[in-house]
Length: 255
Image 1 (spheres, rainbow, N blue to C red):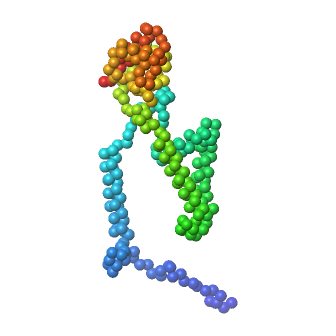
Image 2: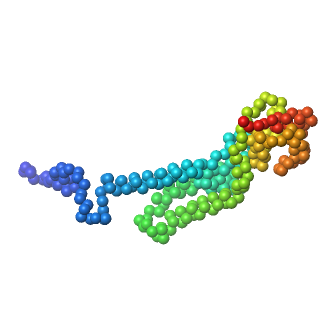
Image 3: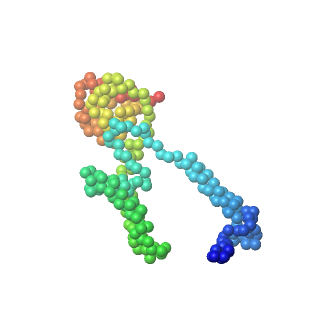
């Protein structure tokens, strides 16, 4: 083989032979049609983002997040409600075959199948078309998922007792409670704690027992005869226990 034969050199036009300084192009020839990414375009993006961010911060200051009272683990009447973006799962767990003994189906199986189908969507429908009408499988799955989420969210919101939720989450005055006193022990032993809570801050349908403004005689009368959602004769105890309980509740005043 002669020298130089049998070997060819191929040049790549994408690699410049000469290094040139990275100078932005002059866009003055195309006014209003294009612009440099840095700093012109990026500066506009930052300015728009800053306006929305300041507006969002002003909205949070003007309308702060609604807070509820301190969580009371002894309040068995409290009905929790998740945020709106989880309401469809919350509603799903109310149905017969997704709750109780079938809780695994509603909490793991059905959501797992739904999100798993989204992960498999690119492998199931591999068509190049971008129009929804020409991709019926992907479009059908997406519309079905969207319709299910909207329907379940609406059902959860429509059948929730919002007035009861507002009452049970209402922030009430706090007071230092002597849990070693005889009055509190009677309050706990007679089951009052189940409705009014360990901190006597009330629950769903049960009012708070702080700052009632009632005299001991009036408290005793309500304990015997009932009032509102509280039925008559619910207190089971001696007159001496009723007296100590009434004096304890009447003396609960916030500072």
